[in-house]
Length: 311
Image (cartoon, rainbow, N blue to C red; front, side):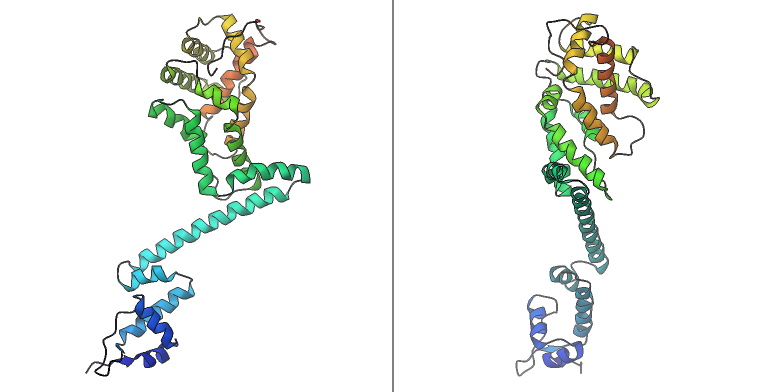
């Protein structure tokens, strides 16, 4: 005859209350026990093994819902452990992010703390901050831009938040959100006066690739084929002639936005470990080259200004 225990006997052996065992049975942590002729529940010895497993998992703060899946054999113990570990790591990442955020607020004087508070509130939740920055760049880039071009830009413009962040890194990431929302930044990249935006972006990316060796070598912006390609692309986009006068007008107009570019890409460079100069950094180098060669300190500007590529 198979050995079975009453609910009271099982409770004594398991070190649990009868009420707890009834609850575990009702929610599926224990299989429904057959009843004796007198109507009392009778549990096999396997029920004790099941209860011990439940107690051990609960000691590790595994939720009842997750344990139920193992008890019903809908999920293996290994899968449960892997899921709990992934969730714990995600929680730790969020705690490290919050710690760095609070340190960034602690390590500064009062007036600066208020400024940082306004900035850091934009990235209070790490996963949400990433999604918000990606959506911001979706608004920045012109609608209808081919996916390959949009992906090439956003792949470098939208970094993943650091997994083990410093206060400076969290602050830099938050300031990216502020810079990308600046009206001048939005207007430049939207290129409202350019008809063929896809061709313009393709040409600008090619010019940036051409400038990468000079940027990587630390050379100052100067007249070179990449700079000429950049100016030609801007002129074609605006259906204008690429002349020294046009470049002077470009230089004058770009002076209003170059500080935003520089600020964005400098902060981004502190957050990424991608080898070589980024597209944004080479673009900024080209813009600064136009300003250096053809701006007021160079070739001089004329009085009447046409719009620059993003205007």
